[in-house]
Amino acid sequence: MDLREILLGGGGVLALVMTLVQIAPVQVKPWSWIAKRIGRAINAEVLEQVQRTEQKLDEHINQDEAARATQERAYILAFNRQLMAGEKHTREEFWEALASIDRYHKYCDAHPEYPNERAVHAIHNIGRVYDERQQKNDFLPDR
Image (cartoon, rainbow, N blue to C red; front, side, top):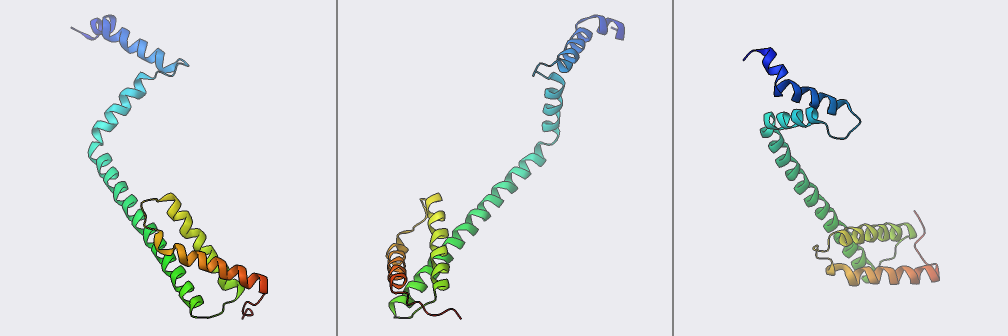
C-alpha cells in the first residue's frame, strides 16, 4: 500500500474531513482534541505532581487560615479579660477588637467545623462594654 492508496482510501478522506471540521465554525475540533489527548498522555506524571502540589498548598492555606482565626480568638479573649479586670481602653482599641471579631466571625461562618463557641460570651461582653462606653463617652483618650 503506497501513499496514493492511503490518501485515496479512508485515511485521506478522514484527514480531510477532520481538517474541514477543525476550520469550520463548529465547536467540534478534532485536531485540538487529539493534540490535547497526546499532551496529557505525555505529561501525565507532571500533571499528577502538579495536582499533588496543589492539594498540599490548599492544606497549608487552610491550616494558616485556621491558625489566624485561633489568633483572632486569643486576642478577643485577652481583650475581654482586660475589660473584666476593669482596664479601660481607647475608642480605637475597641475598634481593633471589633474588627478582630468581624474577621473571626467571617472565618467561622465560612468554616462551620471550626470550634467557635469558645468566644461567644467574650464577644457579647466586648459589644456590651463598647455600647456602654459609647453612651457614656468615657473611653480613654487617644494617645
